[in-house]
Amino acid sequence: MFLKSTAQALSRLFGDSSDNESDSADPGNWNQNANPSGFDFADFFSLNPISNVCAFAPGPHANGPSDYGSGGPGQLVLLDDDGQLSPASSSAAGGSSTHSLTFFGFGGTPAPTLVGKAGGLQFNLIWDSSVSSAPAGFQSAAIAAAQLYTQYYSNPEVINVHIGYGEVDGYRLGQGALGESMSYGYLETYSQVFSALQSNASPGSWAAQANTSLPSADPTNGGSFYVSTAEAKALGQISGTGTATDGYVGLSSIYPFDYSSTTPPASYQYDAIGTFAHELSEVMGRVGSVGSIFGANIYTPLDLFRYSPNGTRDLTAGPGYFSIDKGVTNLGTYNNPQNGGDASDWIPTLQGDSYGSGWAGFRAVVSPTDIIENSVLGYHMTMSAVNGTKTPALG
Image 1 (spheres, rainbow, N blue to C red):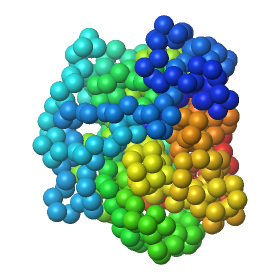
Image 2 (image 1 turned 45 degrees about the horizontal axis):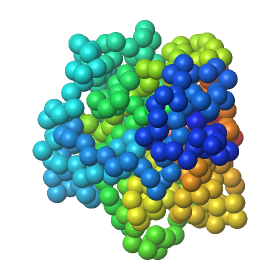
Image 3 (image 1 turned 90 degrees about the vertical axis):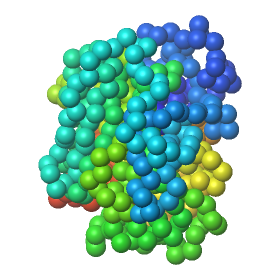
Image 4 (image 1 turned 30 degrees about the vertical axis):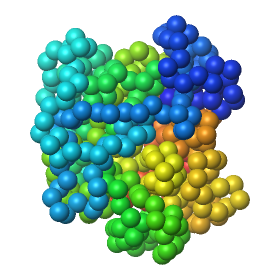
C-alpha cells in the first residue's frame, strides 16, 4: 500500500488525460523534480485502476513470520505494496531476501531501534542497508512517527518493521509514491473478527461504541478478512512479543522531504514524519479491501466501518465515509478507490492529515479521527489520546 502525492491523486480524481495508462507508462513523461505546488500532473505517473494492478510474486522475505504453529487465526499471507496477497511460506522465517539490496549500491546497516516503553506498545525499527545512504534526519523522522503511536496506544506488543530508503523490502518504490508499505497478515472469518473486536474493546471506549454497530450475522456472506499480524497482536489473537517481521515501510529517495518535527515543510517539501506515520499505520492494520482490492470477497476490519452517502454500510469499492454509529455521523470521507489509490485513505483534497494524500508545504498530522480509527481496529488508547479525541477532527 502506498501514499501518493496530491498531484497524482487529483489527476485520478479529476480525470487527467494521462490517467488512462497503467504504471507501465513511458517513464520519459515523468519529471523527477517534484513540483512545489503539488498540482503539476506531469510530475507523476497515473495509478492503476483496481482491476489492473500488476501481479506481484515476492521471494522469501527477511525474517518473515512462520504460521505461529497451530495457534494462528488463519492462513498467513503477505500484502504487498500493490495490494496483492500471496501465501507466506513458513520457510521464510529467518531467511534472507533473494532480492538483495546490493544492487542499490548501499553498504552497512544501522542497528535496530526499539521505540516505546516495555509493557506498552513498541516498535522495533529494523533499518535496511539502504538507510546508510539516507539524508540526515531520516531515522529520527521514522522514530518520531513510531513514538506518536507508542504515546497514543498502550497494547503490550512489539511491532517489527523493516525501514528502507528508496525501497520497500528491497523493491524500488512505485513511481509517484512518497512512501509504501507491505505487511503480513491472516485471512480470517467474520466470526473471528467480530469476536476479537468485541472482546478487545474497553467499556465506554470509541471501539466499544463502534462495535455496537456490527451485526452478529456476517455482512459479507462468507468473505475472508485480512488482519495484519500487528493488529492480530493488538487483538490478542497471537503473542504480542513475537520477533518475526510484521511489515516493511519505505520512503521515497526522489521527492524532497522535511525531516524536522519542529518546523513546517517548505513549499516544495513533503512531511517525512507524516509519511512514515501513514505507512506504519497500514502495517498496524489501517487498510481497506472492500471486497475486491485485495482479491474477490476479501475485506478488512476497517471496511466494516465504511458507509455510503445514503448512510448504509458499504462493502464495495466506491465513495464512502468512516462512521462508528451506524452511519449517522460522518467522521471522515474516504478516497474513492475507483479513482485509484487506497480505499482506507482520506479523500485526496484533504490537506494536512497523515492519512490523506501527501501535500507539499503542509505538516501531515495524525489527527483525532485518525487516532479513533486505529482504536476501533483494536489499539487501546492511552489517557492522553482519550483526552485528545473528545472532539473528532481531521487534519
